[in-house]
Image 1: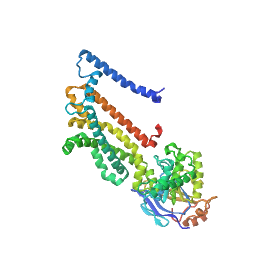
Image 2: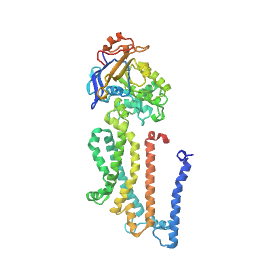
Image 3: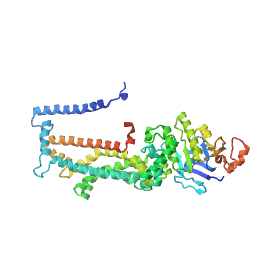
Image 4: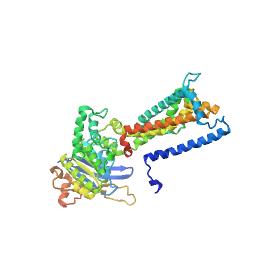
Length: 272
Length: 271
C-alpha cells in the first residue's frame, strides 16, 4: 500500500545544532510505530514534526500526499506524558471539548439537543477507555493512569488520522502501565488507528508496536557534537499475532533489507 | 514536636488569630488610660468613649453645612472610586493580560510598553492626572487604574504564558481556534489568578485612593482623615482607619468566596 504519512529528507536544526538529519520515512495507514532511542536523539523532535508543533528546516512531510501544515490541527491527535487534560474541566467536559470546538465555532459551547448528542458520544468514548464511572470528576481528583485514559479519550473522539503518543505511560507505575498497554492495543485495533509512540521503555516499544524505529546519531564529531543530528538507525517491522493485516506491510524501501536479516533490518539504501 | 509539623485545627486557629489583636487592643487601652489619668483632655490616645462620641456626630447626625451624613457619604464616595478603579483595572487585566500572555505577536508589540508603564511610580503621575483630568473623580479613579492595572496585567499575562504548552497544543489538536482556545481554555484558567491579583492589588488600590483624596477632594474617607488631622482628632482618625481595615477585609473575603464559587477546580486541595 502507498505511504500514508511520509517524510522526505527531513532535517531539523536549531541554530547550528542539528537535531535530526536526513529522515526518510514512510508510515503505512494502521501502523503502530514505536520510536526509541537515547535521550537527546530527537525522538520528541520527530513527534513534534509530525504533530505540526515544529516545522522541518528542510524536507517535506506529507499526509496522504498532501503537505502537512506546520500547525497543529485535528488531523493529528496527541497524548503527552503530562498536562494533556484541562484541569478546569470535568472528565465529561474535557471529552466534549473537541466536539464543541468543531460544532460551535463562535462560542465553543453546545446547548440543548446538540449538547446531549455530544455528551452521548463522549460517554461512549469514556466507556471505551474505562472512565464511564468518573464523568464528573476533575483531573486533579484522578490518578495519573486515569488522567492518561482521559487524554486518550479526548484525542480519540476527534477521530484523528494519526494518534501521537509522547511517552504517554512514562509517569505511571508498572501495574497501571500494563493496563494502559492493553487499553491502547485494544483501541488501536477497534478504531483502526495509526499510532506513533515515543517511549523510553524498549520493552513497551516492542510489545505495543508493529514497527520499531530507533533514532540515534550515525556520525559523531567529538569536537562539535552538535554538528551531526540523529536519524533512523534501525527500522524493525514486527509481525505479531492478532495485528490487523494492513499494518504488517512494511514501507516499500524496507522490503529488500528484510530478506537479508530476519529480525533486525538495517536500512542501507538511504544510508540512514 | 517540631513547629513545622504542628497542625492547628480550625477553632484553635481562630482563637490564636484573635489573641494578638486582643493584646494590641488591651495595650492601647492601658496606654490611653494612663494618658487620660494625667490629662483628661488628651487628644493623642483617645479612649473608646471619646471615639464613640466623636463618631456619633458623623454617623448619625446630618452635617449642618452640607446636610449629609458625613461618615456614610465618605464611605460611599471612597467605595465608588475604589470600585470603579478596580473594575476598570480588572477588565483591562483580563483583556490585555490574556492576549499578551497567549499571542506572541501582541506580546512582542506591547510587552515592553506594559513593563515600562508598570515601573513608573504612580504617585509621580498624580500631578499629570490632575492636570489632564482636573480635580474631579476621573483623576482619582485614573490614579487607582494607573497604579494597579499594570501589575495585574503582568500577573495575568505571566500566568497565561506559563500555562503548559502541552495544553495549548492539545486544544489545537482538538480543533480549537485561537478564539476558542482563549475562551474555553485560557480564560477559565486565568480567572482564579485574576481574582488573586485583585486581592493583592486591594492594598495598593487603597493607598492610591487615600493619596488622591488627601491631595484634592471634598469628600471621602481619606479626605476626612487628612482634614481632621489638623485638629489632632485621633478620635475620628482611629475609627476611620479601623473602618477602612474592615472594608478591605470584607472585600478580600468576598473575593476568596467568588474564586471558590467560580473556579472550584482550582481550590481542590482546600475542599
